[in-house]
Image (cartoon, rainbow, N blue to C red; front, side):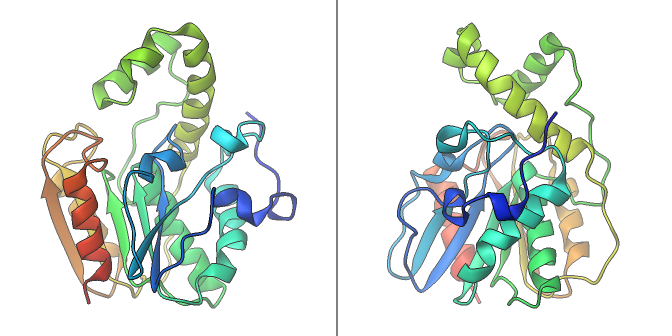
Length: 248
């Protein structure tokens, strides 16, 4: 699969659709494999904390751009775009694949001399040192079955061949990012990490999520919330994210 272009070819504003949220603190939210910025648009913000969805290429307003297939390209381009926006307090949140991206983004920003996030929130994802299933090259029926087990295919998508033909290449590209990800040892993050996991998540158990404690020298918290792999996209989870982002 092709890889998205270098950071110099990508408008920084393309990563942040709509008006850039303004508040005392922003939480930049990265979507799951096959997901888009719209996954977080139902969450509200205010003057104290703004939810800022991040839009990877290959979907919605960026559908003409090739999706990433390598974590290094994804993180380098996103770090270029986000670096000017982290001079005020900020947090990073990622769900599933987005959790790995958020983690590597925090490391990349640190290596560029930028301030650490106030908190890294990782959702529905085993710790980055743990082995991962290989999904991107599954035959189509097996890939669809895997997505159904996760709850990641809406019935209207499954029933519409044209929609499937749009969605599956993006899913495969995102899964390739995860499948080819290799944890590189390095200094621990200093920011607090909060891991969130669904009680019935087939992808990440509480024990899997607890492994994130090994990635920071700061505080670590783990919260289990009702639901499957997509437990995060509920009002209760949004309230928990807000509480965690604003906690000391």
